[in-house]
Length: 323
Image (cartoon, rainbow, N blue to C red; front, side, top):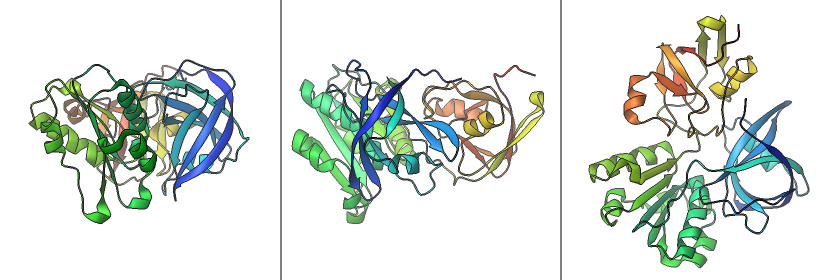
């Protein structure tokens, strides 16, 4: 079951931010309190004939009664981004939230925000909030090419030189170790980007001797250590063997097969959709930010909404007690 309350909404406007990133302005049927930085919105989508849900970070608080999200159309999309890119102004939507698993803590002596690609979306809201609060912060934004930069120009106009851009095509890389060293004691870092960026930030933070709770992550669940491939899930207690296709998550495949699952974020953050691993015949590619590295190393559990298996299959037990 999903922990969601759906409300009707209307797509007010759209525009292209980059060749593959689209800004969508969504008007809910009823107003809510301004969303805190790091919040995300649930959107009901159709994948073929099948209803599903996708989560998108809010670009600002929505205090003016409009929720703004930016959606990247992914080449290996499971269908959600293609659906969102196909919507036209005036379209009717179902939305839930906002919810927040990536909250910004105000009042710290300094902040480092690190974004990679579409990972700019939650950090955009954080940068605006920190700027408004007069807090000391830097936003380091990496992308492959200049045309891949979404929202950089508007951010630059609002926060000035607190934004620094790093482009692969120019050979520039973020010096995470240096940026972390420059932080005041007690400062915090917030990172959203590809899996490799998050792993590098985690290592640099630990090597700097910083407390683990001062580093926060959000993942968009599209990448891991290994390439995405189909795999098989076995649930002996339910006498089920389920093939997870390349373009579907394990959670989606379990739901489609009638396995009762609890979930919320679908982003590898809340931990509600975890299952117990009984045996891994392949390599478990943990793509979540819920479990610690030590927990992932035990291969005792995995987050079904983002994590996968390569080179074989997996045998699990679930919280479903039917049958």
